[in-house]
Image: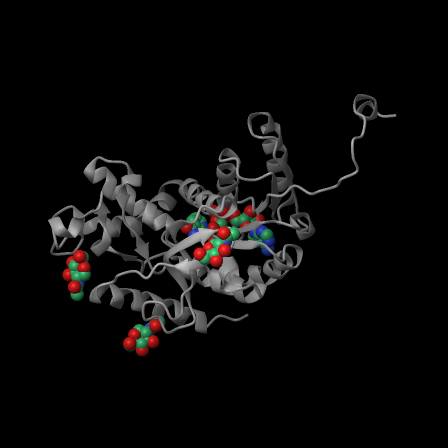
Length: 330
Ligand SMILES: NC(=O)c1ccc[n+]([C@@H]2O[C@H](COP(=O)([O-])OP(=O)(O)OC[C@H]3O[C@@H](n4cnc5c(N)ncnc54)[C@H](O)[C@@H]3O)[C@@H](O)[C@H]2O)c1
Ligand SMILES: *[C@@H]1O[C@H](CO)[C@@H](O)[C@H](O)[C@H]1NC(C)=O
Ligand SMILES: *[C@@H]1O[C@H](CO)[C@@H](O)[C@H](O)[C@H]1NC(C)=O
Ligand SMILES: *[C@@H]1O[C@H](CO)[C@@H](O)[C@H](O)[C@H]1NC(C)=O
């Protein structure tokens, strides 16, 4: 008899599995997502999957040592995707990241080659999961993951411009000295250089900023505000130049997506999903529009009100993604 047998008497043989399992990777982004998910107490099980075995074991051990301060989450990990089986959400953070000054689009073929290996295994072991793609270029990788998984479109989404929008709201908020959560503002399109800021719908307490200053955010508009979108686009490059990679903000933004899904919150967030047929987009592409996120994934996309120049910018963003997509080998 083990000490455990002497301590407990068995009350039932029920082997019901823990209900809320999330799988993530262990790079700098994967660990930031993991920590944000743990601190928000969203998962009962957290599984880390990667190809670097020592790093994996070390991260699992380190997190488990912290379990006293968490909610006794079952944390495990390894190279084998069977460990991820039955996940509610799989966050894909695997892949090459940008070097200083490198664009996201230049990573694409390298990451497609990785996805060819991992996405079919994810789908096999968690056929009912929702996949959240974070690897860059995230819009293309979301499309690739959707195709490789064979999942319905509402169950494959990308972190998209949720992060760009957070940067946008942070900059506007600090100019107005209020909290970013009190600014309504959204960036749509490609997560990257061709993203589209929707100045026409920026508002504070229902008051639209264009009602105060019609040219706000435009090159010929009020000083200071004209460079806000450029600061958003440059944001990632600045962080990469200074610390080598970005991770905390993407980890937090990803955990918020996980939360809206697992808790069925129906929050609206700009995330990447298949948008053909929306706002005049005619190509087979994924890009970000504001979406309702609930336990089923993305079932509803907001019919955003775009003016002529915003529509043209979104079309340009979609065309750029479609063009790179055409040349992918997979
Ligand atoms: N969408 C966003 O907003 C956003 C923000 C930041 C970073 N990213 C992207 O996230 C990705 C990861 O960035 P990072 O900084 O964590 O990089 P990283 O190098 O720290 O981590 C990448 C991880 O992927 C793993 N990996 C490589 N091949 C694999 C395979 N075949 N199977 C499983 N794992 C594999 C590596 O071992 C490594 O641990 C990059 O593509 C980066 O551009 C996206
Ligand atoms: C679209 O909206 C922006 C922001 O309100 C404005 O500056 C721009 O002139 C508008 N473009 C058109 C074509 O109406
Ligand atoms: C952009 O608009 C043009 C002209 O309407 C259209 O032919 C093209 O398919 C659109 N591009 C995308 C990506 O939808
Ligand atoms: C999520 O939202 C969609 C559309 O609004 C709805 O059909 C679906 O039932 C919702 N899912 C859950 C689990 O509530």
